[in-house]
Each structure stands twice: as structure tokens, then as C-alpha cells.
Image 1 (tube, rainbow, N blue to C red):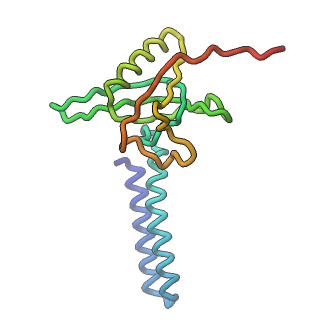
Image 2: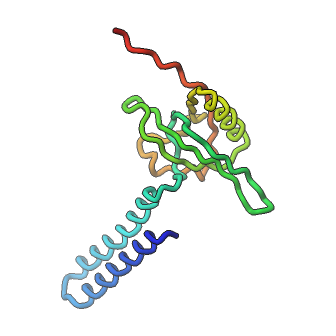
Image 3: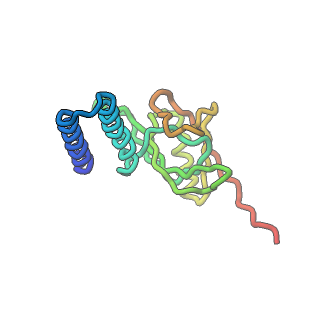
Length: 170
């Protein structure tokens, strides 16, 4: 837990205590007090969930359906040390509206097939060949993908060379 998240928790605790004092010291209707309590409680969980993304850690959320692999780190499982293993990807989503957007970090559960695919793609990337990945089976996130997590199922990647960029006609 970082100092920022401890500070955030302390600030929300302070607001909750002030709300408790306000609810006990006033003669407002009960439904107004309940609404205020629900708003403060809900805002704590929403803010905590939102700030998690701003801390810079890779997200466990679902990958986009198609993306460019910028970089990857593979942590192999080690049962003796209690390490489950994970694949960390730094990717740039490809969508028709905004190609080549800002990269984002993702964390995937370890899969041997993905390990070999990503290792090969890293080798080809070092040769200067951009790599494009697609989620097999159409399990990628779109629309409300920010709610979908990668932890509930294993994601299988299909990685290939990016098509050569064409120059616009004159």
C-alpha cells in the first residue's frame, strides 16, 4: 500500500466521521441522512477503484481485441517460491478511430502458449518488425471493457507481423 492510498483512506475516514457528526447533530429527515451516507460510502469505493489505475501499475482488465505489442516481461511460475507467474504487456490499442494511441500496461495470467508467442514476437521486434496481437476466440474487450477482468479466464493471443505502412497517394 502506498502513502498516497493511506492518505486517501484517512481523508475518506475523516469525511465519514464528519458525516456521522452531522447526522447525529442535525434534525434532518432520515432519508436525507441515508442518501448522504450512501453517497460518501459509494464515492470511497469508486475513488479507490479509479485511483488504482492512476498509480501506474499494470491493469488486470481485459485487453483490447487488437493491439500493437510495445514490450513484454514474462514472469514464469515457480511453485517452490509460491509465484503463480504472469505476463506483463505494454501495448498500444488498435482501433479504427484512433490508431496507435498511448501505450498501457496489462497483466495477464501465465500461459505457456502465450509465453512462446510473446518470446518470438520480442525476437522479431528486436529485428525492427512491429508485432500485432489479436485475442483468439474474440474474448477481447470492447464497449464496457474497463469492467472486464483477465483473471476469470485465460486469454490466448495470436501474434503476427504488422502490415507494412503504405504511403498516401499524391
